[in-house]
Image (cartoon, rainbow, N blue to C red):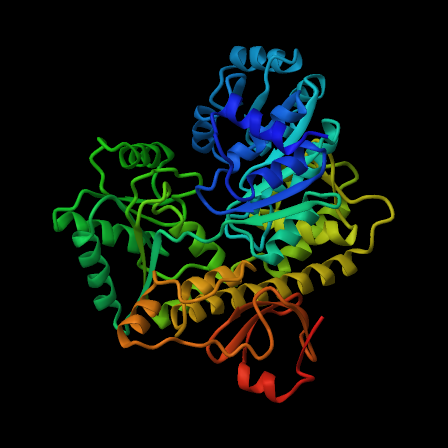
Length: 541
């Protein structure tokens, strides 16, 4: 067992860290001891140091699954000397040489994308190299509860088994309680140590500005971006809005560019590089959520949302790109209640019942395991829709994903009819839960009490208001008043049971209401007066 003192010594001598931040030591200690670990720490809190430290303590090869090449490059620059990157940019000879070095034990940290793990040669090299730690970075990509779900992540548990099942360390900057549960389930974490630390970003000033008119809202966003100091990001919900806001800023003399999935990969890379480089000439990035994962630009002074985010998880991840190195930064949501309709529409845009039926029958018709890509092409479905259906079927036992990524209907599986009914029911349930997450964004925007307390409560982290760094607390201070939260006998993080909605966790205590995330029906808001008046309505567990 590695001691805390030994870990601190490793951090100083190999990583150059004279101290460790809250959560880093706890997570590294658990992973170094060989325990599956889920580490949830806010953006900029040093998650990469956790896996490097745990890997050094364990010895052997640390395998790091990272979803984007740009993100892999960033991590490689800050990694220990014997680190390498395996991705599609390598030529055939370079790839073969790297795999030989991995198999020979000459690499301490290998960063790679999840799709690389379906290759038999890669799996063999990782086994021969003595993989001692399997790291899943951006682990919220595993969860369809999460806001950046990626189908390739669903096969990581099988990949870990194929290389000898080393301890798994899952890292993410944003994961509400139900996301954590799904991460642990899909990665098959065994009795994991769950470390949740440091969600508070006290250097971020939180503000919401409310509008009725769409044109007035857009004009206000443009005015704000023109007047704000330093580099900043404007997030929009659609490509059309992204282009329009960027054009409006350019007309006002701001060095702004648009970034969304409608642009080629080369153009996106070029614009991101120009924004990341202080000498690149781009001051404002106007983007959809296609921009952001792994972005570590230390001098972003503000983040503005032209449109409301899909969830609090997504919003906190997006605003976390401001003030990464602790300097004061502003985050402003330009809120229009009518915009929630677009988010509810997106929330309903999952796989349809008829598509679930087609996937089930296609699996039943195949005698041999099938490549998911082949199945998706045959059924004219996106990878995400296919993965969504397969996830429902896996839980039922109707589908099985093999170590090489192929999928099949296993012997003794339930009937097609049962699989379709289960999949359709599960998808309807998931859509309902997604809509409650949109409702939580409305609760944040319309909150009359400390915004920081609401955000942190959503992630299960108690916070004593006032924060002194949000528009609500600013107003209370100016008025000489303080909002006293009516707790109804509950505090953030309490496990509770509702007489109709079952078990849940208190996420936030407002001045006159409670927000609870229930295990089966998602987020609900209850009036504190009603809860206090009926002791049987909501009980502590």
